[in-house]
Length: 429
Image 1 (tube, rainbow, N blue to C red):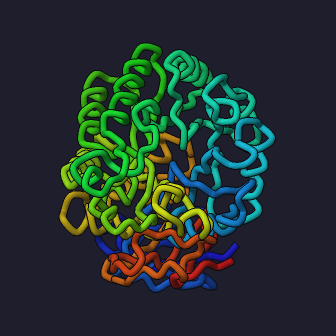
Image 2: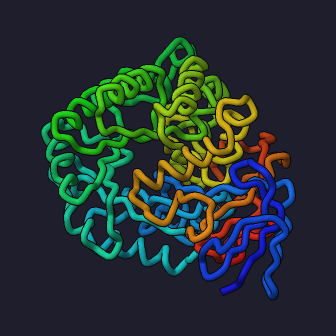
């Protein structure tokens, strides 16, 4: 294993220091370190963060390898500064058995760029009718601890209660796609004045908020862990704040695109901006940023959702919802949270590494940058700026909502347990 001497990086944006990485761990941190035979990484001006952790990634394999594979998605994740990603269950076949989650886990092991952590389905086939093999998936080689029917809401409250009760036995968490389906039939974008003017069926904020309100009460009642996926409305933030004030064991994530983009994007009728939940209003974006800043929202989850060309380049109504997110997530957080002073670099580490790792129960991720800790690290140049070129992304898909937009920040290097998966801004495999 290569020994690296990272020269002059700024851990969590603090004072410059050298970081010696050997045998998969941080061996030393200090001034003017020397290590004979080490590969030197010049990092003056770069911020060092713990490797980022994504709670919400769609890798599409098995079943839709035309849109993404574990290999290509892992490369995109490493280039974005991630060292662990949670692969959502809506594959084909659905990841609702020990066999399928172990297949995804082994594909991640073979790719070797990031830790691919499978998310198990809550219900068989994501159908919302009966619980999947939660215990078997938890006991499998993949050691699943996060379960979600993402893309579908666990709408039946009795079934949701049983799921919450079941995962308590192994400290699991149910990650809910909060959408009351009876309020969103045929929905195409956020419900409001703009949807009425554009003639597109609206997706009301209440459809999200009603499920979150219900589920935090259920989680409180049974004493279980609940995680809310892709929070998108100001009302949702207020419900979460209330629930946390009561001691409910609830966590939540926000996507990069919901921190940056609004429903005004739909005026172009460009289906790249179609996503579930939909882009919301300026007031919602402001509430989401405030909620992430004060910790009401625990994490940034990319909801990286690659789609084949034929699934996005169509009429708006026929296009599938979803956006790419892994490679630009940190840049969006820098633009929306760091540059305006809402989060410092320690706060970025907390929301993009420490808390996501805790929620997913990943013991070796989200750790302090300190001697003896696993060397899961990312080096980022916060001063770099570049326009996003979808054709240059590592994903097999091109449905980036940031095409042509100039964003700050560039991942220079990513280390997974002391191995450089990205160096000089390029994936190493």
